[in-house]
Length: 110
Ligand code: 5GP
Ligand code: ZN
Image 1 (tube, rainbow, N blue to C red):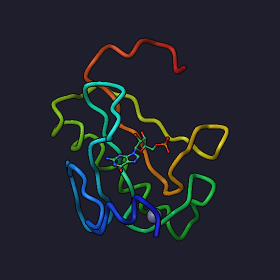
Image 2 (tube, helix red, strand yellow; image 1 turned 90 degrees about the vertical axis):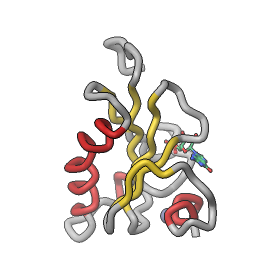
Image 3 (tube, helix red, strand yellow; image 1 turned 90 degrees about the horizontal axis):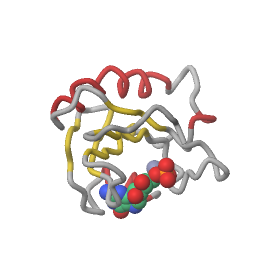
Image 4 (tube, rainbow, N blue to C red; image 1 turned 120 degrees about the vertical axis):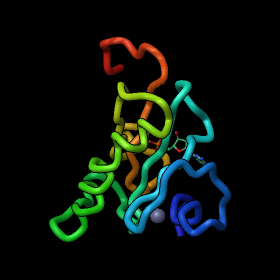
């Protein structure tokens, strides 16, 4: 089982922000901004390269819920980040989207 599967099943504690039957959102342990939430599908999907016609409903659900999760955190302007693979800095091989905001992020991506 991967770290985020353990966070979803509660065997590793996390600060939950939102949960439903499809997705789980929690505060990043090492935040880069005042709001830094990690949003994961409840089904284990390795990374963006592993999204298929059979599991893309989890990705759709995450994006359908992002405005609500952002609102729960008190923001309506934010950046969504997905790191896919080693060169991009993906450190946990369970598909996840970073929701980052709560400060002026600037126009540059990197
Ligand atoms: P990645 O680098 O794979 O895109 O993002 C993984 C994120 O998970 C990092 O921002 C890291 O701080 C966060 N993270 C790693 N381990 C834990 C943990 O045990 N709990 C929480 N809440 N976040 C974690
Ligand atoms: Zn997993």
